[in-house]
Image (cartoon, rainbow over all chains, first blue to last red; front, side, top):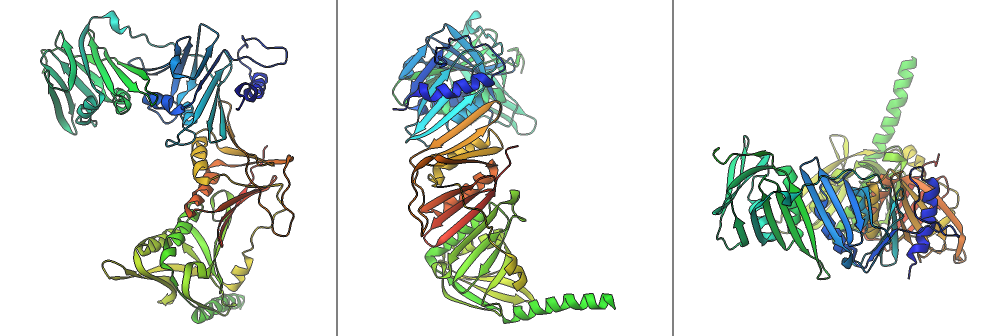
Length: 302
Length: 299
């Protein structure tokens, strides 16, 4: 029953007068109400907080670039130029999705955004979410409701950073593996996370993780090609690549909320992990991660 | 001569204390199903200060944390009837059968924890090598062993006890019932990540708003349809949205007050004295914990 627009009208006008940056490119109606260029509403906020939790790897000051389009809203996180995570929230997930533009992109404090999404605690159920964006220079506004208690958040938006374009398909894909997320998680659980890097060796016969640490020693996990954990195992060339474990961690942690995952490596060693998440409302969402290799390890090397 | 006179006065005070000490007696058995409540009170007030004053009288037990010892000038005044927590309670002193002492809450907590699964927990005032202790005598249920734990205390003089006066503040602008603390904790925990100060707005029409604000983020949670407490002897509160007030307090301190959810209160009342303090009454039958959280000036 709560009128989102009316509730936010005051907030937006207040914010507009305080705002020093940016032009309000959206129209102002006669009575001073600011139109949102983007509004969406979902009855169960847990669905999207579950998906987006896969991108959170810093409790404080992590940023994310938000891209709003007709098809949905995408959150992108990066670490340097070698790691990127993307969560696509398709517009079908939402009970209401209205976007009057072509494309809007902005940067927000993602750690605080997730705090807002989880304001009623991780175990809260039946939290509804409404989000609104007034266009360049305006805050991202969230309204969360649980049992008649309302929380209103305004997050200042910043200019988006230029996102890395990984162009994964620009090089031939040499390995493609599809498996249950649980099985891949189990494999990663065996890895020595105290080491710095993980070496991934893929060939038509083998699937191997190995780590080497001067402190904790070396460790190797092998899965034979015909192991039943693999739903699909396609590999055209043998390749060995090394990846920083701390950059791998978010993608691995995300496996615990995923149902299935697709692991692919292209010719230049770029690793792609795409997780399929089954939402509470039975819809499916995808989160994908790209990780650049540390160094190309020659297969002749020991 | 002057030095001698000065020395003599000090000794006399010490002698008085020691004399009082010799005539003090206190012992009680903690009711078995109340050990955990006693422990919850101690764990709760420990969040505000590592020490407190325990003031025992014939009828009552009070826990006092003064502004001087707490962070941010918060005061906690808590009390419970002695027969709620104890049986076989006996107290004797030259000072109107009142005894007060300072005690470290972590040590008190440890002894109570040991007593949680016990058959019998008794406490008494003891003297060992001239030093006062609150001694716990715990009979373990399973192993059938007896544990004695002596918690050192610092006795307060009659003069010192009389200096402990609960803060007197003007009538609050607004009095309102708090929403469930356990749920409010989630909200405040998230707000702690945003900023340092909490703005609290309340009116006499059941509305309570908590807000944290920086130039990057604002977060505000609104509760409505809350009740207002009826004060004894006064007419019931009339709903009036025009009577409202706002106060700013330290967020971390407010979060520490929220730990009082542990005592599972039946009612929590929030009173706002504009520009001065937020006074919170946490109530469970005859147990009360009153928090005085100072206001932070808006400038």
